[in-house]
Every structure is written in structure tokens, then in C-alpha cells.
Amino acid sequence: MEEYLSIGEMAKLHGITRQTLLYYDNIELFKPTKVTKRGYRFYEKGQMPALREICFLKSTGVSLKDIREQLERREVALEVELLNRQKDIIASQIEKLNKMREYLKQRINFCEEAADGVKMKMLYEPFVRYIGEREAVFSDALPENREQWPTYIAELWKDIFQREMVVSCNIGFTLWKNSIMKNDYLKKARYCIFLPYHDDNLPKVQRIPAGKFVCIYAYGMYYDVTYMKKLLAWIDANGYELCGDILDVCLLNKVFCSMKNTEFSMIQAPIRKR
View 1 (cartoon, rainbow, N blue to C red):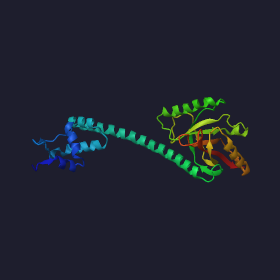
View 2 (cartoon, helix red, strand yellow):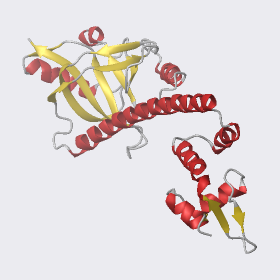
View 3 (spheres, rainbow, N blue to C red):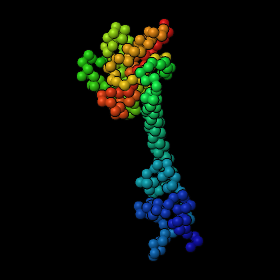
View 4 (spheres, rainbow, N blue to C red):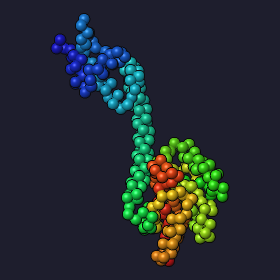
């Protein structure tokens, strides 16, 4: 039977398993030419091009159903149509994977920042850091009634999820500079969510310019201005002035904080020399 290949030989030549060929036989995708009384399967060497086609299409993600239809029709024009369709599917998958990679990078950055902050000996002590440009989607100014605030963050989540963007970090809280200067710290405060990548179609997106910030790691809730006041005192004592809104960036929310009703955050105040 030198003109035939056993199922094991056929499988080995194409880098697949014997079980795969058995499955292809069962679904009538690729059947052996000869089956002995004992159930041994043998293939003609002339069947190899068809199996190579199956292996190629399957390796690109084409479904076995589409492969069967293509082998039944054996038309080059339809092959081109099938390959172009699969190419578009792969391009879409690549786009989604690239976005997923950005989500992971953003979450890793926040987690690493949190881990470093927790270990820092200068917890609750101000330090100066350059922070690059960021983009975030912002809520409207929050009302005085704090019980209404959850509705505003919920609206932000909704806008983002409707555009199939996964939020890979926690919220931030922005305190308006003019309100800070008037000692009315929470007036016109807003929620924000930092974006892992730019999206022209997302409403309420604003750019946060790069620059020098005086920062402090702290446990507490975003509406507690104790450590923000400490930053302001440091700014005044060290010859700087506040040059923008203050950000309270949540690094670890209640999921990770063992203390009840608290979060771990980095408060960031943009500064310049007086």
C-alpha cells in the first residue's frame, strides 16, 4: 500500500494530530480514501493539497463550516472573498487586542504607582514630580448635595461603556482652582476618568497638560481636603504657586483598601515658581 498514507503519516506530514483527522472524517470535511475492515484509515497522496488548504484556512481562523463550503465550491473568486473577509475579521481583532493592551498598561501603571506609594517612607509627605500629558472625561460640576454625586459618576461610566471602551482604572476627583483660592474647596468639583487612549467621539474629554506637580500619597476619601490643604501650605512655603486645578487620583479603591470607607490616592497640584 505504498500509494497510500496511514492516518498517522498523514497527520505527521501536516503537523496535526491523528485525532484531528478522525474528527475531520466524522464531520465529513476530509475523509480517507480507504478504510479496512479493522477500521484502519488510509489516504491517497493526491489528497494532500486539500488537507494543506484546510490546515492553512484553519490557521487563519476560518471556521470549519466555511472551509467545508469552500472545498465544495472550489471557486477562486469565492476563495478571494473568503480570505478578504477573514482579513477584515483579523484586523478588527487586532484593533481590539491593541485596545486591550492599552487597558492593561494603564491598570498596571496605576497598580505599580499604588504599590510604590504604599511602600514609600514619605507617605503623607509632599514631593515634586513631572507628569506627562493626560486625557480624561469629566463630569459636570457637582452639586452641593453630596447624595447626588453618585449619579454624576454613573453618567460618566455610561458614556464610556456605550462606546465599548473598558475603564481600566478608578475615578479621579478635580477641585477647581478658583474655588480653592476662595477656601470653598468643593465648589464646582468634578469627577473624571482617565482614558487609556484618545477617542474623538467621547464627549466631555479634556486634556490635562503635562507639567510639574507637587503630590502627596494619602488614605482617605476624595471629599476630605485635609491633605490637599497640606499641599497648599507646602506650595506657599517653598516659593511656588498653584497654576491649575488639583487632582485627587484614586489608586486603590475600597476593593483593595482594608480600612472601611477609605481609598488610597495621589493628590496632584500643578505648580510653577512664583
